[in-house]
Amino acid sequence: MAAIFSAAVFLLGLGPAVPWLLGALGRLPGPLQAAARHLADDRARTAPAVATTMVATAVTVALAIVAPAQTAQDRANYEPRAQPGALVVLFAPEQAAATEAAVRRESPGVPVARGYEVATGYLDVLDDNDHASNIGDRALLSYLTGDPSPPYDPGTAVVVAEEAESGHTVRYQYHLSDPDDSRTRSIQAISVEPAPGGLERVFVPMEFVQGLGLRLDVVALIVDPALHRASAADRDRLAGLLGDRVEVYLEQGFRDTGGWRYLAAILALVGLAGALVATARSERPRVLRRLGSPRLLTACRAALAAACGTVAGVPAGCVIGLLLAWPFTTSIGWDVAPRVPFETPWALIGLPAVAMPLLAGLGGLLVRKPTSGRGWRPRASSPASP
Image (cartoon, rainbow, N blue to C red; front, side, top):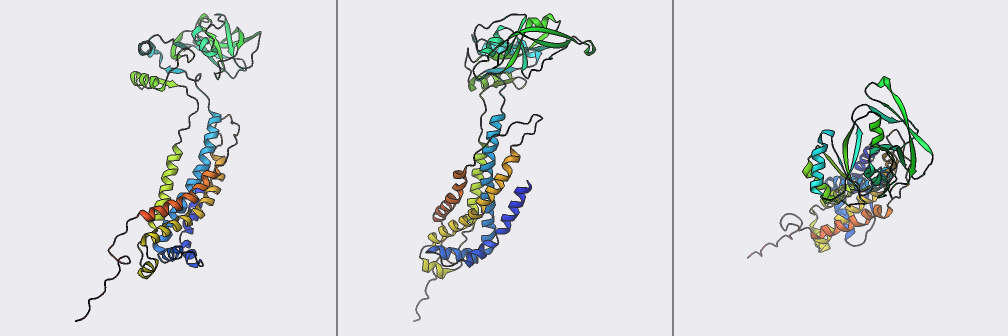
């Protein structure tokens, strides 16, 4: 924020210097000379208008650098909540019966897997394992592995991971009500690979957990994408039916909303408007009569004002964006995510420097100037004396 503020103050300070620089320019070709003189003479209008174009261009360019860098980092840090394409319905235990009835009514014949959690007491894995534990039945294991007939044993846990292990156990700590009365229990485990693109989890059979004396509640319903491919329309329909107290989630992977592009477009329009504001009505009728085309002069003024703004705004935006790209992509969590290299979109950065003067000039040609007032309508000759 300090970098943005300092750059904005610097560019605003450059605004009053633009008319002076234009007046100090040497001979320019054609109507650009007259346009430069007009901008130099109309300092009160030219300075804030060009400064606005500078600041808007700089912020647009900085946004074009920072936003793609942050998007690349967010894509690398994205952690899916479910298997790709899975539709997950999350709810409170007391809503389980009504929610499942609604889901099955809206999707008749679609297989649904249940996800469980411990209702009373406590259960936690003791092994040094980064994978979360999922409690369920054969349908949940099938969803995790992508296998319609997975090896299911009520007394055997399944480690769903890319690196399979054999002949090992998983230890759990649990208590029924009193934390001081904690106990441990081990369960034999096998390892299988997850579904393509799926999650790594430790699957615990619900029979094992119930055998410890713990009560389970249904808290999730999952539509396995291998059995039925849900759509965004299915998600929206269920969300509207179940209300705000139930979360309906469709895993679609990382999705870039691209909202920064709309902001960049608005800022570019602000910069373009600043250039057009500099096309004030001429106060030098002799120059207009010599030039012969008020619209051409207006277009040259707008193009030259936009060029003055972008010449300073684009380099300043590059400096701001490159300075802010790394801080804006810094991890703020306990687990620091690895940095992801990002490419600076130089073609997109150079676009305002070319497009804005052209668009401003075109806008100046299309502006309809009034035909009354000073400087545009030639003074009528006096009638001859009798």
